[in-house]
Length: 68
Image (cartoon, rainbow, N blue to C red):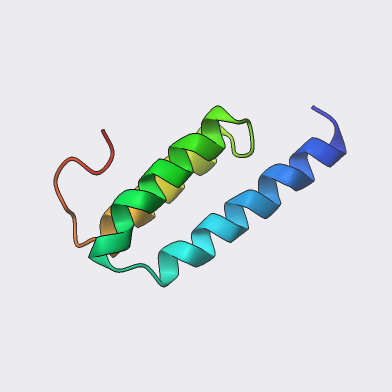
């Protein structure tokens, strides 16, 4: 992947991570969908997806089924 693609991934990852810092339980489900979509679109890689999903679970208070 070229440098430009890596920058795009990093920017999306940072954007999603910032959203997770401010998320409440009501928004957690939508952010999980956003993370999955960003991964499907190639905006974040698998490791970034895993980290963001872990953060989403923490932000949502460990709601069951969030990462599925």
